[in-house]
Length: 269
Ligand SMILES: C[S@@+](CC[C@H](N)C(=O)[O-])C[C@H]1O[C@@H](n2cnc3c(N)ncnc32)[C@H](O)[C@@H]1O
Image 1: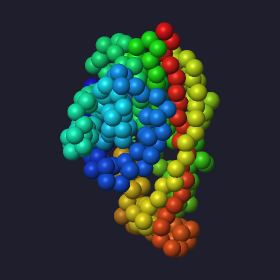
Image 2: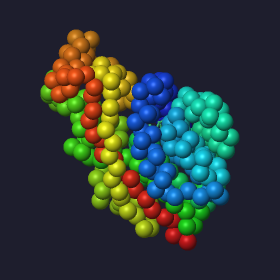
Image 3: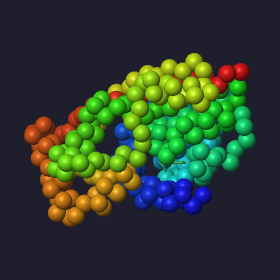
Image 4: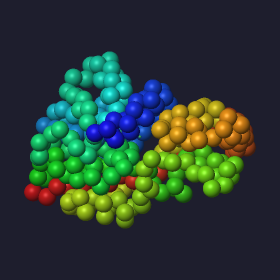
């Protein structure tokens, strides 16, 4: 308990920045995830590590109800506030570690996680938990980033860091997986009919500085990284990212692709 509380505070601390700078992008992928699990009006859905609601709020319009799990209270408060503003009533928040949900076995027809379960220190434990809470015949959908070389949108940040400070790397707080690894992880957790699709969108930011703000403030890993640098090192890194982007995008607008993996499966009957 103590461990996940400490981890969750780190996400609490970035929740505002996540909502203002990051979620617009994860929502693009959430749309594909929600589409791919093919929701129907009677489905009860759980969204693991729901954050500020990228997938939950889209799913709510297409199913019976959504339990929105996250271990960060601040993320869930933003989610709830958005749902209230949108008049969405068929969601509930479930504040818990996603590897130990306070939920009986076999409750949901669908379990989804958009850039969520993959951030768990023990992500297969999150997949097994999704399996446990699904009814027989239930469907799972999990979205995560493709291997780094297929995500140029993030490479400017990590690549510039490594150039400025050889040996230093950004802690992304998640494991990198490719298609076979993700497929095997779902199969090992018990899922059948596993398949992994790819989805790609451009990260579009109005300026190099907006890109920096998004990358620097939107995740606990970046915050930790920047805290590990001296203020001169931070300035050097910041300047180098801006210079790199000004060179690539002289007109100002920044646009770089990011590929994600979308894994689908079922719990056998
Ligand atoms: C990158 S965000 C994704 C949020 C959202 N699903 C989206 O697509 O924008 C990762 C989320 O995972 C949550 N998280 C990380 N570890 C968790 C755990 N063990 N249990 C529950 N939530 C967790 C964080 O609080 C954060 O909201």
